[in-house]
Structure formats: C-alpha cells, structure tokens
Length: 272
Figure 1 (tube, helix red, strand yellow):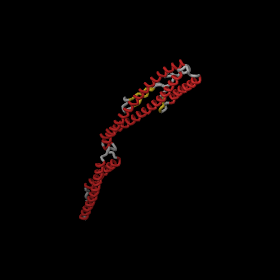
Figure 2: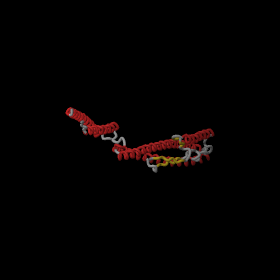
Figure 3: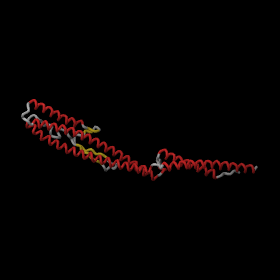
Figure 4: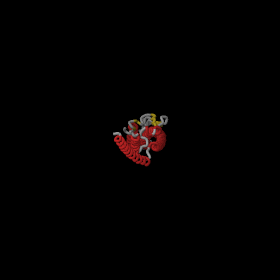
C-alpha cells in the first residue's frame, strides 16, 4: 500500500502557475509594457490599439502638413525672386520712358528687359516640389492634416509666368511701349502680392494645423503610456515576490515528496 499525497500534485500545480506568472512579470519588466498580449488585459489592449492607430495616423498627418509647409516655402521663395525681377523691369521701363535716351541706351534696356522676362519663365518652369510643378498652371493640392478623413486642407496653386501676368509681349523699345509696360508691370505686381498674401495665409494655417496635430499626438501618446506602460516598481516587487513563492513551493514539494516516501517505506516494511 502506497500513499498518494494530494499535496504533491497541489505543490506542482502552484509551481507551474507561479512559473507562468513570473515569466509574464519578466516580460513586462523587460519590455516596459504592462500589456504585451491580449491575455494581459483584454479591455486594456482594445484601448491601447485604438490609441496606437490614432497616434500613427496623427504622426503621418503631421508629416503631410510639414510637406505642405515646405512646398509653400518653395513657392514663396520663387515668388519673391519673380517680384525682384518685376521691380527691376519696372525700373528699366521707367528709365526707357525717356526720349533723351540714345539708341545704345535703349538697346541695352531692351536686352536686359528681355533677359528678365526669360528668367521669370525659367523660374516658373523649374520651381517644383517632389517633382510637382508649382507655378506652371492653376491646380488644387489637397493635404490630409488629421487622422480624420474629413479634415483636409486645400492649397490653391496659380500659374505665374509672363503670359499669365500679361507682360509676355511687353517691351521698352519706345517711349510709348515703355509707358504701357509700366502700367502692365504694376498690375502684375499687384496680382503677385495678392498671391503671396494667400500663400502666407496657407502657410500660417498649415503651421497651426501642424501644432494642433502635434499636441493631439502628444496627448494621445501620454494616454497610451498610462494604459500600456508597466509600473516598474510594482513589477519588480511582483517579480521578487514571485521568485520567493517559487522557491517556497519547490521546497515544499521536496519536503512533501520526502515525507511521503518515508511514510510509504515504513508502511511497506510493516506489511512484510
């Protein structure tokens, strides 16, 4: 007759359960995360995954907005360069509206005026962002500035070249031509200033959108951390406690086995 002590099986079960608990705590300490899988906290992981999706969406929206800001900076730099060309062209036109100029003076004015017009068209043709021509034609560019599909910002680009500004055929060859050109350049400058104002407003709006998106991302990241991150002090205490319990259960299992074996040996001898 042998004694089959239920305490042996109970101690073994406690050791196994404690082993799994210890492994979970070690994982939390190593990763710094309170939730590493759904079994750690089913409701918590639902919230954390939702936060993660929002954070990643806002992060990408922020990058989109930064691209839009960089694009507008490129546009404004080109418009500033064109403005300088127009100022110089007006200066030449005013100078040419003078019948006291010699033929050589007028020829030099004509050549410089022509070069400036060509340079404006070259700027228009070469100004681009990510291979998108920014001053060649009118177009709307939509930018997703939030993780919400309905929150977008539209930048309205305009064509800016000598034809669009109606100075393509302007000349300074005669007093009359120069006088007419002065008026044309003034109109072109006024339109260009209006476009630069709109571009500046778009720039400010996108900067504000980026700040809002960054703040939302920061707040969500903090919320995610509160849901997901492990309390390191508590986790370390649980790990120490778990190790102590594991050692205790192991020692108890050994003691129970030795006691059971001793009793079984005595009983076996008494039956002989």
